[in-house]
Length: 330
Image (cartoon, rainbow, N blue to C red; front, side):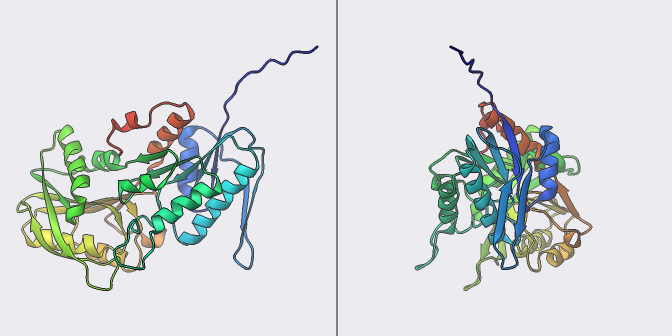
């Protein structure tokens, strides 16, 4: 009788949707692995076709998709990829969503509204994902929408590391609204660890009735006069909030202003507003691809690939992701 020798092996495989091809390539380079072979195409009626070009049976699969424009197509493409991987007997499927769409719809602000962030979580679960990775969710509570592990990464150390190279003098980290206080505090703490004393301020804003992604800055709580100010947020969408905040802190005597955010959505009039804003620099990451026509002189785009690569490696090796960020990624 022949005895089979069982040798347990783990196989890392990285596949990417069409939502952020540049980031996908950078991530593969950081991990020193090839992007998996996959066929993705769109039929003339808009339906998406997917087929893995190699066996994924028993593999630890990571499916990367930025929920960029067209957002709903990108989400559907990732769901289809996950379903295909599940049916092809992948051992574990991790949905890597650098930018998690619909994150601002995490609660009912008015009656008869959906909670779409929860709906997307349910769709990823139903499709067959075993784990989710995202970067700087709009609210950390979104992790609770999932009945599976969620690794919540943060780009704040990356942004701070870049900013400390150019800021001088007294510094104030400014949250564009009261809800951004926690993020501003994390920025300030990391700046102080790098020898930069930083105060905090926040802006009182109002949202005109009937609007969902527009807000107007009205007053500042905190000291900005004569100081270098860093306006921080998790994302820049239409840039209405952040650009009006930049004008306000300059009006209140700030020496100079920089803007830092993880996700550069840059929809609608965002580019024009940021181009005209009185700021030294606008720093974002490439969680969402920013086409060349949306680039402007003061824009700096940092790569999030090293951070995601480190997290993927930790997950594959079953080591701690939180230790990468010293527990500051919740």
